Image (tube, rainbow, N blue to C red; front, top):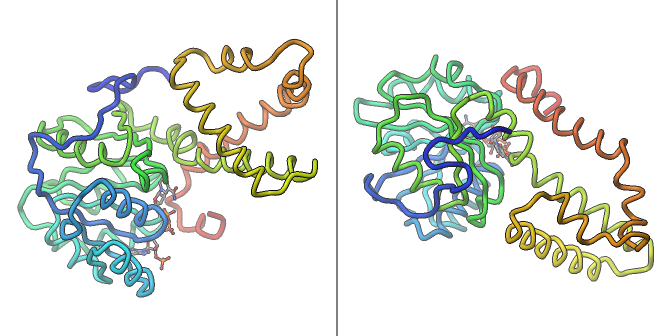
Length: 298
Ligand SMILES: NC(=O)c1ccc[n+]([C@@H]2O[C@H](COP(=O)([O-])OP(=O)(O)OC[C@H]3O[C@@H](n4cnc5c(N)ncnc54)[C@H](OP(=O)(O)O)[C@@H]3O)[C@@H](O)[C@H]2O)c1
């Protein structure tokens, strides 16, 4: 991906603090599934007061569990959730947007509000058909690590963006991880395929390593601990070095050694083709996610 972020640059993502914009804004999260819950967890973990967060979630069991675990209010009627909110985060599946957004027509009122869709594939023009012009519409693509304040979040907001909105969004998402502004909406599909789905790619690789170690006689718990430690250490090295991943790989690979033996299997065209094909498949999938037919094969 070429440089796409504007202010701040992709090399210096926004971090952490709310400044300037109202720091007592109220948040509505529509959808208390995997991502909605991760947002609640991340915001509470960051020190946000529970009274500032309301969730719209139809499932009574999930409502109860969100209220019990985080002290937030969870309601079945999205209108009651949106009415008090300054920022509305939409965390429902893309196919649910057409059911979730139109009934809110009468709930927006006249005061300043922001709606941020977290749904993969749903373009701003698509969302706009259901949202009045008084509401600023943005899109963000996070990943599940927002739960721990370690997400990566790409944000796109069509110009012009009021400074107060920009500051509010940077403060809000900065609580949940590293924020990258995109200049082109189309790049959100690449982000979705890379960092949105990305944790699953790492988890899959870890699963396979665990299976390999177990096949060589190691207890799964021990293998898991070693894999977690290796993953954390590798990330720390990569962060510190800031160089090409290839250079780091070569530093671990003595000619004729054990790593070189492993890489004769991994560094094969088939393997790299599979990775390229996987990311491309995720990217292409974003294009038809808002089609209700796609629910049968999510
Ligand atoms: N999961 C991720 O890692 C991830 C990462 C980036 C972006 N996203 C995006 O985030 C969105 C949600 O993904 P997810 O994985 O969290 O899906 P999910 O687990 O299926 O959660 C969606 C939630 O929305 C609820 N819902 C359905 N209709 C609703 C309505 N009318 N009002 C309020 N809530 C409603 C669902 O309830 P029912 O189950 O009862 O229908 C469910 O609890 C998707 O658009 C996805 O593209 C997800």
